[in-house]
Length: 226
Ligand SMILES: Nc1ncnc2c1ncn2[C@@H]1O[C@H](COP(=O)(O)OP(=O)(O)OP(=O)(O)O)[C@@H](O)[C@H]1O
Ligand SMILES: O=P(O)(O)OC[C@H]1O[C@H](OP(=O)(O)OP(=O)(O)O)[C@H](O)[C@@H]1O
Image (cartoon, rainbow, N blue to C red; front, side, top):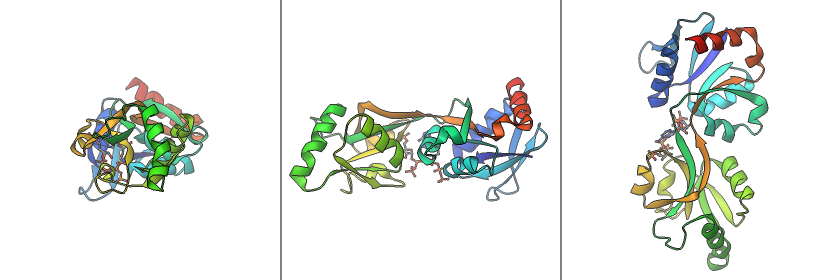
Protein backbone atom coordinates (compact mmCIF):
# COMPACT_ATOMS: atom_id res chain seq x y z
CA UNK A 1 0.00 0.00 0.00
CA UNK A 2 1.28 3.50 -0.89
CA UNK A 3 0.50 6.06 1.79
CA UNK A 4 0.01 9.54 0.31
CA UNK A 5 0.26 12.41 2.81
CA UNK A 6 -1.73 15.52 1.95
CA UNK A 7 -2.29 18.77 3.92
CA UNK A 8 -5.42 18.32 5.96
CA UNK A 9 -7.04 21.73 5.45
CA UNK A 10 -7.30 25.00 3.61
CA UNK A 11 -6.21 26.08 0.14
CA UNK A 12 -3.24 23.73 0.09
CA UNK A 13 -5.55 20.73 0.56
CA UNK A 14 -8.06 21.92 -2.04
CA UNK A 15 -5.42 22.70 -4.65
CA UNK A 16 -3.77 19.34 -4.01
CA UNK A 17 -7.11 17.61 -4.58
CA UNK A 18 -7.52 19.60 -7.85
CA UNK A 19 -3.99 18.70 -9.00
CA UNK A 20 -4.62 14.95 -8.51
CA UNK A 21 -8.11 15.19 -10.05
CA UNK A 22 -6.59 16.74 -13.20
CA UNK A 23 -4.44 13.58 -13.41
CA UNK A 24 -7.32 11.18 -13.03
CA UNK A 25 -7.04 10.46 -9.30
CA UNK A 26 -9.89 11.66 -7.07
CA UNK A 27 -8.91 12.44 -3.47
CA UNK A 28 -11.60 13.34 -0.99
CA UNK A 29 -12.17 13.71 2.70
CA UNK A 30 -14.57 11.13 4.02
CA UNK A 31 -16.97 11.81 6.84
CA UNK A 32 -17.40 15.23 8.33
CA UNK A 33 -15.13 18.26 7.84
CA UNK A 34 -13.62 17.53 11.20
CA UNK A 35 -12.77 13.89 10.55
CA UNK A 36 -9.22 13.47 9.21
CA UNK A 37 -9.89 10.45 7.01
CA UNK A 38 -9.86 10.31 3.24
CA UNK A 39 -10.58 8.29 0.11
CA UNK A 40 -8.68 7.67 -3.12
CA UNK A 41 -10.50 6.77 -6.35
CA UNK A 42 -8.87 6.10 -9.69
CA UNK A 43 -5.77 4.31 -8.37
CA UNK A 44 -5.43 0.98 -6.58
CA UNK A 45 -3.28 0.43 -3.53
CA UNK A 46 -3.08 4.08 -2.49
CA UNK A 47 -4.37 5.38 0.82
CA UNK A 48 -4.82 9.02 1.77
CA UNK A 49 -3.25 10.31 5.00
CA UNK A 50 -4.37 13.81 6.03
CA UNK A 51 -1.64 15.59 7.94
CA UNK A 52 -0.46 19.05 8.94
CA UNK A 53 1.74 20.45 6.11
CA UNK A 54 4.48 20.99 8.68
CA UNK A 55 4.56 17.32 9.69
CA UNK A 56 4.71 15.88 6.17
CA UNK A 57 8.53 16.28 5.80
CA UNK A 58 9.18 14.28 8.98
CA UNK A 59 6.68 11.56 8.05
CA UNK A 60 8.27 11.23 4.58
CA UNK A 61 11.78 11.03 6.00
CA UNK A 62 10.72 8.39 8.53
CA UNK A 63 9.06 6.31 5.79
CA UNK A 64 5.66 6.44 7.48
CA UNK A 65 4.30 7.82 4.20
CA UNK A 66 5.74 6.96 0.78
CA UNK A 67 4.50 10.13 -0.97
CA UNK A 68 3.61 13.54 0.42
CA UNK A 69 2.59 17.03 -0.67
CA UNK A 70 4.03 20.03 1.12
CA UNK A 71 5.98 23.23 0.51
CA UNK A 72 9.65 23.09 -0.49
CA UNK A 73 10.28 25.57 2.35
CA UNK A 74 9.06 23.10 4.96
CA UNK A 75 11.12 20.20 3.58
CA UNK A 76 14.33 22.27 3.46
CA UNK A 77 13.71 23.75 6.90
CA UNK A 78 12.73 20.58 8.73
CA UNK A 79 15.08 18.00 7.18
CA UNK A 80 18.79 18.75 7.63
CA UNK A 81 19.80 16.33 4.90
CA UNK A 82 16.64 16.60 2.82
CA UNK A 83 18.29 15.39 -0.39
CA UNK A 84 19.15 12.04 1.13
CA UNK A 85 15.74 11.66 2.83
CA UNK A 86 13.34 12.60 0.05
CA UNK A 87 13.07 12.93 -3.73
CA UNK A 88 11.34 15.88 -5.37
CA UNK A 89 8.85 14.25 -7.75
CA UNK A 90 6.93 17.20 -9.18
CA UNK A 91 6.55 20.92 -8.48
CA UNK A 92 2.77 21.45 -8.45
CA UNK A 93 2.42 25.07 -9.56
CA UNK A 94 0.59 26.44 -6.52
CA UNK A 95 1.36 27.42 -2.93
CA UNK A 96 3.98 29.87 -4.20
CA UNK A 97 5.54 31.78 -1.33
CA UNK A 98 8.88 33.57 -0.94
CA UNK A 99 10.94 33.36 2.22
CA UNK A 100 12.30 36.88 2.57
CA UNK A 101 14.01 39.23 5.00
CA UNK A 102 12.03 42.36 5.90
CA UNK A 103 12.78 45.45 7.97
CA UNK A 104 10.66 48.40 9.15
CA UNK A 105 9.47 50.74 6.37
CA UNK A 106 10.91 53.64 8.32
CA UNK A 107 14.52 52.34 8.01
CA UNK A 108 15.27 54.74 5.14
CA UNK A 109 18.98 53.90 5.16
CA UNK A 110 18.29 50.19 4.72
CA UNK A 111 17.61 49.41 1.06
CA UNK A 112 19.57 46.20 0.55
CA UNK A 113 21.47 43.42 2.29
CA UNK A 114 24.71 45.42 2.50
CA UNK A 115 22.87 48.19 4.36
CA UNK A 116 21.31 45.56 6.61
CA UNK A 117 24.70 43.98 7.38
CA UNK A 118 26.13 47.40 8.28
CA UNK A 119 23.15 48.21 10.53
CA UNK A 120 23.49 44.81 12.21
CA UNK A 121 27.23 45.41 12.82
CA UNK A 122 26.55 48.76 14.52
CA UNK A 123 23.46 47.59 16.38
CA UNK A 124 25.20 45.69 19.18
CA UNK A 125 27.48 48.57 20.14
CA UNK A 126 24.53 50.96 20.20
CA UNK A 127 22.04 48.72 22.05
CA UNK A 128 24.07 46.19 24.01
CA UNK A 129 22.47 43.18 22.29
CA UNK A 130 22.47 41.73 18.79
CA UNK A 131 19.83 42.76 16.27
CA UNK A 132 16.91 40.33 16.52
CA UNK A 133 15.36 38.57 13.52
CA UNK A 134 12.04 36.83 14.25
CA UNK A 135 11.38 33.66 12.26
CA UNK A 136 10.26 30.07 12.31
CA UNK A 137 12.73 29.19 9.53
CA UNK A 138 15.82 28.90 11.71
CA UNK A 139 17.87 26.52 9.58
CA UNK A 140 17.22 28.27 6.25
CA UNK A 141 17.79 31.78 7.59
CA UNK A 142 21.02 30.87 9.43
CA UNK A 143 22.46 29.09 6.41
CA UNK A 144 21.51 31.89 4.01
CA UNK A 145 22.89 34.69 6.21
CA UNK A 146 26.12 32.76 6.79
CA UNK A 147 26.47 32.41 3.01
CA UNK A 148 26.06 36.17 2.68
CA UNK A 149 28.47 37.00 5.48
CA UNK A 150 25.93 38.50 7.84
CA UNK A 151 26.89 37.43 11.36
CA UNK A 152 25.82 40.12 13.83
CA UNK A 153 22.28 39.06 14.62
CA UNK A 154 20.27 36.68 16.79
CA UNK A 155 17.21 34.67 15.83
CA UNK A 156 14.07 35.00 17.90
CA UNK A 157 11.65 32.12 17.50
CA UNK A 158 8.24 33.08 16.15
CA UNK A 159 5.80 30.34 15.16
CA UNK A 160 3.07 32.68 13.87
CA UNK A 161 2.08 36.34 13.48
CA UNK A 162 5.77 36.96 12.85
CA UNK A 163 5.14 40.32 11.14
CA UNK A 164 3.76 41.62 14.46
CA UNK A 165 7.00 41.10 16.37
CA UNK A 166 8.57 44.34 15.15
CA UNK A 167 5.68 46.51 16.36
CA UNK A 168 5.68 44.48 19.58
CA UNK A 169 9.37 45.26 19.99
CA UNK A 170 10.46 41.67 20.31
CA UNK A 171 12.47 41.87 17.06
CA UNK A 172 14.00 44.47 14.73
CA UNK A 173 13.55 42.46 11.52
CA UNK A 174 11.72 39.35 10.35
CA UNK A 175 12.29 36.43 7.98
CA UNK A 176 9.01 34.90 6.86
CA UNK A 177 7.12 33.74 3.81
CA UNK A 178 5.07 36.15 1.77
CA UNK A 179 2.88 35.77 -1.28
CA UNK A 180 0.66 38.84 -1.82
CA UNK A 181 2.80 41.06 0.44
CA UNK A 182 -0.33 42.30 2.24
CA UNK A 183 0.71 41.14 5.69
CA UNK A 184 4.07 42.90 5.37
CA UNK A 185 2.46 46.13 4.16
CA UNK A 186 -0.14 46.06 6.92
CA UNK A 187 2.64 45.76 9.47
CA UNK A 188 4.78 48.57 7.96
CA UNK A 189 7.58 46.28 6.83
CA UNK A 190 9.53 46.30 3.56
CA UNK A 191 11.31 43.45 1.81
CA UNK A 192 15.03 43.75 1.19
CA UNK A 193 15.00 43.17 -2.57
CA UNK A 194 18.27 41.21 -2.64
CA UNK A 195 17.31 39.02 0.32
CA UNK A 196 15.16 36.32 -1.27
CA UNK A 197 16.12 33.32 0.85
CA UNK A 198 13.95 30.74 -0.92
CA UNK A 199 11.16 30.68 -3.51
CA UNK A 200 8.85 27.91 -2.33
CA UNK A 201 5.93 26.09 -3.90
CA UNK A 202 3.82 23.04 -3.15
CA UNK A 203 5.64 19.95 -4.37
CA UNK A 204 5.00 16.21 -4.53
CA UNK A 205 7.80 14.45 -2.64
CA UNK A 206 8.63 10.77 -2.24
CA UNK A 207 10.53 9.01 0.50
CA UNK A 208 13.96 8.45 -1.13
CA UNK A 209 13.92 4.65 -0.85
CA UNK A 210 10.22 4.29 -1.69
CA UNK A 211 10.70 6.34 -4.88
CA UNK A 212 12.56 3.38 -6.37
CA UNK A 213 9.88 0.75 -5.68
CA UNK A 214 7.79 -0.70 -8.51
CA UNK A 215 4.56 0.26 -6.69
CA UNK A 216 5.46 3.96 -6.40
CA UNK A 217 6.90 4.10 -9.92
CA UNK A 218 3.67 2.63 -11.31
CA UNK A 219 1.56 5.20 -9.46
CA UNK A 220 3.77 8.08 -10.65
CA UNK A 221 3.50 6.85 -14.26
CA UNK A 222 -0.27 6.71 -13.89
CA UNK A 223 -0.22 10.37 -12.75
CA UNK A 224 2.08 11.36 -15.61
CA UNK A 225 -0.28 9.75 -18.13
CA UNK A 226 -3.38 11.04 -16.32
N1 LIG B 1 0.18 33.19 2.31
C1 LIG B 1 0.65 32.10 1.73
N2 LIG B 1 0.60 32.00 0.39
C2 LIG B 1 1.07 30.88 -0.23
N3 LIG B 1 1.61 29.83 0.42
C3 LIG B 1 1.66 29.91 1.75
C4 LIG B 1 1.18 31.02 2.46
N4 LIG B 1 1.35 30.78 3.77
C5 LIG B 1 1.90 29.57 3.84
N5 LIG B 1 2.11 29.04 2.65
C6 LIG B 1 2.73 27.76 2.33
O1 LIG B 1 1.89 26.74 2.78
C7 LIG B 1 2.63 25.71 3.41
C8 LIG B 1 2.05 25.42 4.77
O2 LIG B 1 2.25 26.52 5.61
P1 LIG B 1 1.98 26.45 7.17
O3 LIG B 1 3.07 25.74 7.88
O4 LIG B 1 1.68 27.83 7.59
O5 LIG B 1 0.73 25.54 7.15
P2 LIG B 1 -0.40 25.38 8.20
O6 LIG B 1 -1.51 24.72 7.46
O7 LIG B 1 -0.62 26.69 8.89
O8 LIG B 1 0.31 24.34 9.14
P3 LIG B 1 -0.31 23.73 10.45
O9 LIG B 1 -1.32 22.70 9.99
O10 LIG B 1 0.89 23.11 11.10
O11 LIG B 1 -0.92 24.87 11.21
C9 LIG B 1 4.09 26.18 3.45
O12 LIG B 1 4.83 25.43 2.51
C10 LIG B 1 4.03 27.63 3.05
O13 LIG B 1 5.10 28.01 2.22
O1 LIG C 1 2.04 37.89 1.79
P1 LIG C 1 0.68 37.46 2.31
O2 LIG C 1 -0.23 37.02 1.20
O3 LIG C 1 0.08 38.47 3.20
O4 LIG C 1 0.91 36.11 3.15
C1 LIG C 1 1.88 36.04 4.15
C2 LIG C 1 1.37 35.44 5.40
O5 LIG C 1 0.91 34.10 5.20
C3 LIG C 1 1.53 33.25 6.15
O6 LIG C 1 0.84 33.25 7.33
P2 LIG C 1 -0.30 32.19 7.70
O7 LIG C 1 -1.60 32.71 7.26
O8 LIG C 1 0.09 30.82 7.22
O9 LIG C 1 -0.25 32.27 9.27
P3 LIG C 1 0.97 32.17 10.33
O10 LIG C 1 1.13 33.58 10.83
O11 LIG C 1 0.45 31.23 11.34
O12 LIG C 1 2.21 31.67 9.61
C4 LIG C 1 2.86 33.93 6.42
O13 LIG C 1 3.41 33.52 7.67
C5 LIG C 1 2.51 35.39 6.39
O14 LIG C 1 2.10 35.85 7.66
